[in-house]
Image: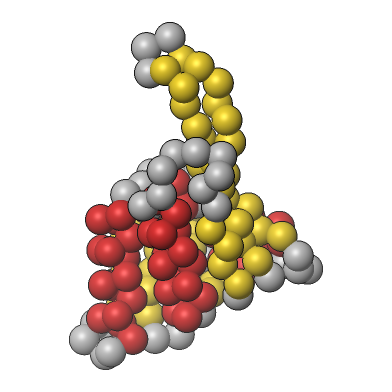
Length: 135
């Protein structure tokens, strides 16, 4: 499974000028729909800045290291529940996407995802800015 973080050209906005939109996408595996919904579909809601990524990575480290048993965080109708067993992603906007097995991922996966997303957010907003994360 590979996640690709890139920008889509959003055209020219009269006030903002040339704009680009985040385009995280999963490719190359049987679980592509799952990763597109529960990972790529929520990154813009839970980790909009490098600081958000750092905060989430610190929560992951605290759970991995046993300093915390459980951390619940998120934003914009997305809840992440971090435990030693993994990360549960719940998309609150649709009750069918809450508490599902499809929404459960390992801590290692989410660490790789957030590290890659953080690298992507640090790059210039340009079509050439691309980060690939292999899971």
